[in-house]
Length: 279
Image (cartoon, rainbow, N blue to C red; front, side, top):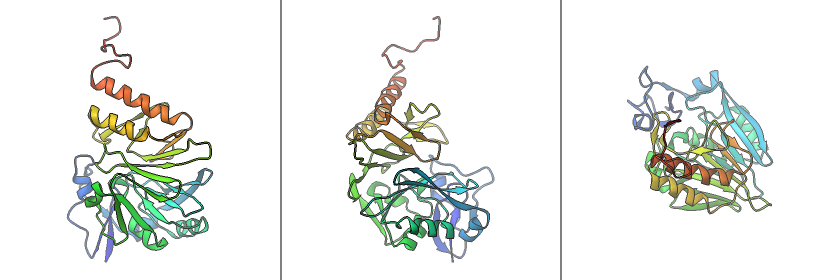
């Protein structure tokens, strides 16, 4: 019996002697089935050619990735607290290196995942570290590998003191972000790609589908900005190593939502209609 892993999205599926006929995550319009068709791998096969890497991102925040890059290539984050560690998002591989390093860092109390594309091997991680998996109720039907460890929340939850996960919607109905309070009263926001840090790190963006470039509507974008606007956060970390904003992140989200909506309306951010230069 194997917990088959989709090669395109990296999400594990139920234990079975043969892989399923398709991956519902990739068949959804937000994702895609690769040009070579549906492909699967097994955990031991993945471990034979890949390894986990851990790196300190900032105090009490440790990144966990997979090298060479696999599937979507996301990086998870271990949020360390005195009341237990929270794993934000997940990766498709749990190897001996990750087991030892995370155990040395205090293990995992709760796993929280921003959206179904990053469910990855969350059941493997939860089983090994005896952790619960906390997901937005709106997205629980997307869980491909069922587990009794899955718990749900509706709008927000506090998995450990000082850490809050909030459903913001958008990319998925249950897309969430995580806020970590800091001593200065501002803190850190972890977003996966519920809110995406773009190439110009002064800005973020919001999409229904990133690989297929399908936008969100005005009401949804403003709703995301309103929900995260309830928090103060200086720094923001997206779902990949380089996707981060190191200062003024709360202001970046607010002005990015304004810019996005202005473009939907066919206006420049200053409210004037967009026109070509010299027209």
